[in-house]
Length: 236
Image (cartoon, rainbow, N blue to C red):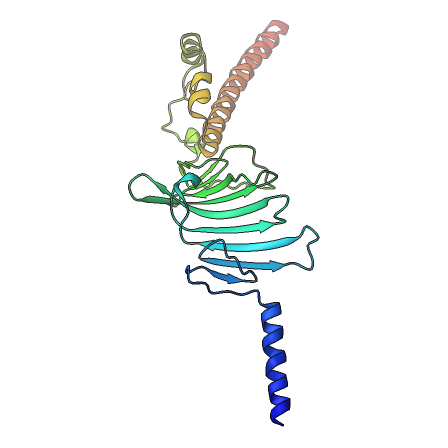
């Protein structure tokens, strides 16, 4: 019985030493699936569903200043040979502000910023300095965009609304080169446009134009009535 137990223990330790892939070295780095951890916590596992090769997860508490910024890093590496890399890093912005950046890289292993969450909560896609809650440098494609608005342009139909005369509108166009209440081409090129606000301005112009047409229709109808009356009088 003792010989059997000794044999089992020998085989157990032999198998453990051969298949050992986890390590807790004196450097403080912990390796799971690797005996040479590259960071404070290095998890290395081979995916059976991904033909590209190794899939590595590295959690690193700090990295060198050469990587720009300081702070934690979560790095996912798919197929080390081709250097397909994705990471989540914290970057110090100024004295105390910290941003969270999502990055990917290919070929050379160089990482490119794809999305940033700033210290103030702004999200940037294609930019690391988002100035709004969502800043996108590039094209956006969506099935639907909903913009919430207040003070819609129906005030044009209120009785106390002062409709500019066509003469006043003509004078403004001649002097400014654009419709009243509508930003100029230079302003749009410099500042862009707010979709909700611009839609309201355009609707206002459509409603004003509708009022002009109604007024013109009334004048035309009045003239037609006068012509018909003259014709009737001539027949008599």
